[in-house]
Length: 262
Image (tube, rainbow, N blue to C red; front, side):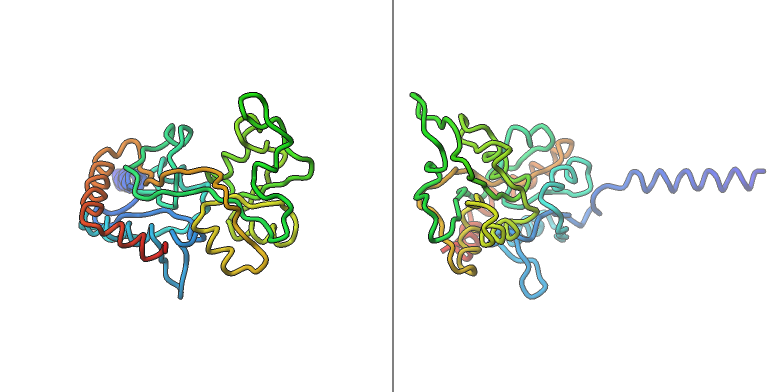
């Protein structure tokens, strides 16, 4: 009986140990990203590369840690950081009121523009032409019949576009979500959507490798990128912000951004 009790206690201790394990060891910083978002994160020659990858690597170095990257669906990043599965979420991510309910964000490290990709023969000169007209305050009244907007699901492009026309969205019924930006662009090529709204740098990358596409001159939105961190980990938030401040002051972040964005 005593032997059985000892074994039971040992099992309970082991379960407690596993349950108490955090996202990483003390010397490893686990970063969740979606590596289909050039030039911020993508795969090249079997390696993760991009602006976010290089900045995160320098942050980990400042924290005397080793960076470990987890490539996941964009929509699962916030939940993974919130649950403690990942230490940070870094994927060209914009701070929104909804996301702030679940995680904290670092200071901004880069600026992003939401751009509109269309086919070269698109009859609409600007996304503003996707609307039927505007009210006395200059807000859209409705969406032209047949307009369909492709977005990467759970991104700010998705959030903006899914809003009602009066808030410069296109309505849920006129938005088609895809797992990756590349999938959305492929849908545009195949004529399944009228346009794709996505961050400007990925937009430029997609247009450069797909003939017959262009970016409209009018910006859809302007936003700042930041790093998602668990609300209970104020210590990590401070360390990351301190590292970002140091890397910004030294010019390292600008050097990385300039390397990818000409």
